Image 1 (cartoon, rainbow, N blue to C red):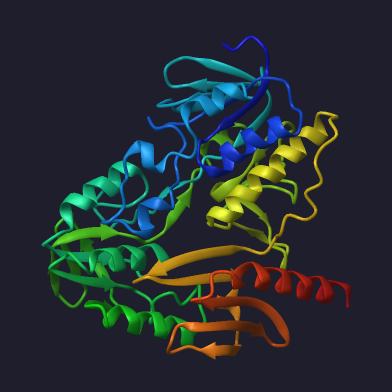
Image 2 (cartoon, rainbow, N blue to C red):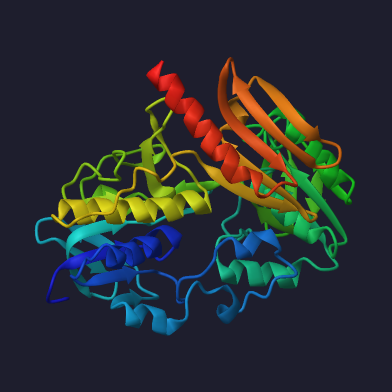
Length: 393
């Protein structure tokens, strides 16, 4: 067992690792330990899907920091270790190998796992970790590819595969791809872009059986090839439940400062269900930038709870910002454009050169920036100001 309790962070993704770095920047001097179940040092998960086939996914290329960075800041990174339990009585986490780490503050940055459904065999390929990506780099070139799921990750995989696969088809159960993420006009534009690049998109598809090499649909059609499941993720809430923290469908329930319902236990990143800025309901945000900001916020909260002069995080935006790339075209997604009922276009959609403001009634709720990567942050500020005015009205 670690002799001196400090901050223990379970999960070595961007939320957890940013929390560790931010704690040190805030003047936190107790031990900081990050425990991850992967063998790798912390790495850029976005590298796995943005340019899957062309990317160099060696550990040296995708790692976040050089190994000495962590030692210089007295941050212990424990790799290849699974945490099985949390003992809130003794304030220890219990690892599968028997080791115990004492904590005064515990951050659950446990992320999520690929969503499993009865129709999908457990052996079907997914894209969550470097080993998954390297396997797909071997299985895609020269073969038919069948992607189950027409969300952002599924379409990023399709875009990467299009140049080298024999054929690519995306199967989506909903009437349109990206229907929950983007306004219909923008979703249609992206679907047309994929079709122009040899990708077949089939919507309204009822999948009944998915194996690593075949997909069978309710109408009896069988698609063959390298099958990839991209049907979303499920938050890993098991440790939170073991600790007695409240959880819900969206993840681990936290307040605005990322405290769980258990004193001394916090949650950050994809697993945290923070009050939605518009509705107040628990909501999960699965974006790299949001997870990074969670790391900063949870570190400031821990520092404040420990009586330190915590950094001010009031300027950290609550408006989600994500980006995706399809055939070299950059798309910035800001706020909640999928909830809009009307849009206002500045630019030319057909040329992928536009800023699209998205409204629900009179409220500016989101934006999509096509081919304008610098516009995303500006729109984030504009949406945040609009939300502030709405609340104050």
